Length: 314
Image: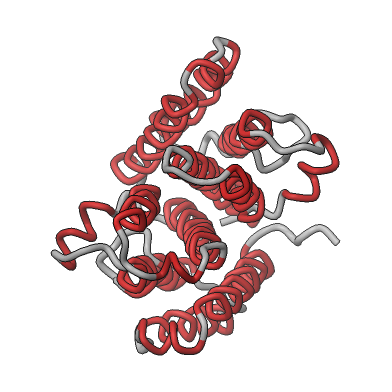
């Protein structure tokens, strides 16, 4: 496959997944804002959302004072934010259009319809009326995009590059969410209280894992088990373990003459998760573990670009 084609497919999937994860982060923060808390704690929650995507400096430069409305507007539709939901879905559609002949009609029409409906919804004032409804719509369209891809595309290199982009992006975003939600919490939050239940339940719902947690543990929600579920459980679709397993499998399907080291790098990262335990991770420091993981995921993305895609801009 031409590297240009692989590049468009890979980034179409990454931008779609990024839009969904941004919607999930905004949605869970809106839910946690409903809990009794100080104004300072509420502001820290919104700053954490910006911090997940490394957008705090850009936001402060444009807006100065922080308000919920401005954070949502910045993260959803601000034309100066290249990581906004609107920008991500636009980039996904542009990448899909560039390789329209490689996609099935259903995949292209899903991407195009998502972009058209998004513009209509934002013009219609959905953010002012009910931002939660918009975030659910974004998640639904992302689910639809993945389902149509799996259900209609030939399992060839095009399919595997789409899947590779999806799971690299998901691993990055899940790690950022875990890090921010744990690292920004006070130490008192790591003890079981009634208030903590709603906090950690909201975190689980942000990755569609609340029911999964109940099935897996059948017990009260504790921070350590939330971390274990989202990091080490291979049967949890959005966990780091599950994402890395998919990355390794899809790299194997598209391997070429120069990708051996990249496959080996991904395999080591997956093995580190397979043979780790949540006790060891928490003992040595969850924040340090996730910081290292994010650095390695970034390195892995660069290796994939070097071996398969268009050269990265200098």
